[in-house]
Image (cartoon, rainbow, N blue to C red):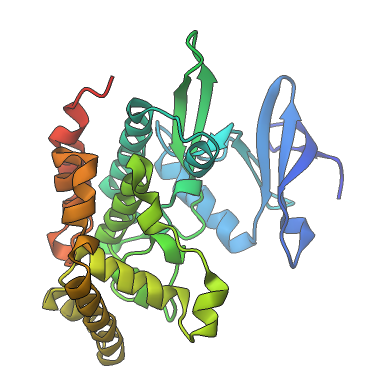
Length: 320
């Protein structure tokens, strides 16, 4: 592979460090690159995704909050993206001192990105903290101040025609941040993005200890999949599970599996009522509790829309 790439724009990019190495095909690894004084990300993608990216970007040329490619090389199937210094995941893991004001700023911009998508009937399907890109700098007091924020990674993006749901033979997106219906791969809608955004918001505001799943090997030894554990946890937090979820999924086998997870969650809550989000989420404040509860409603049709979220009083609370 050449150390440089010439974009269709004529701009030359010098490949640098590998940001993400593809395990099976190193040609699909993601590289940091430099052109002049600016940094970029080079991502070679399969032709099907390349064509989808062209179509997707053509609809959002005026976007403020989506990280779209700024150049490409059609012959090599490479997309060129602007480089961001960090992700929401890294910002919180590496610097838990990040202020609530800056966390809310990031979430607000993610909400605006989702509003752009949903306004044109696209579903992201993989909203998670490491797909939220951010640039930041230290201010005079040594505090991190976030400047640019964008939602990225549209590998799974889906165009919903006339509000149609997305159905797949398997779950798509990251298991940790999926909606319950997303875990089944059935009837994924805009509401599924809202649920994932709600989880991201809870995580950003300090609820990560409840959401992040560790001990995969212990689960495997007990014959439990991560998806089963996550479903049970979410049903414990945001339950009780309404029949509307089973009706929405509309599949006998999956409804049976969901009911099984619901029964386990109900028993856990009987022993430990503090598992409910209404208990531990109260620490986030009443407005945050109300908004995130509406986003993680287990009935997809009852979840807040992105417009309702961006109009919520949560954003007007002064956290300085």
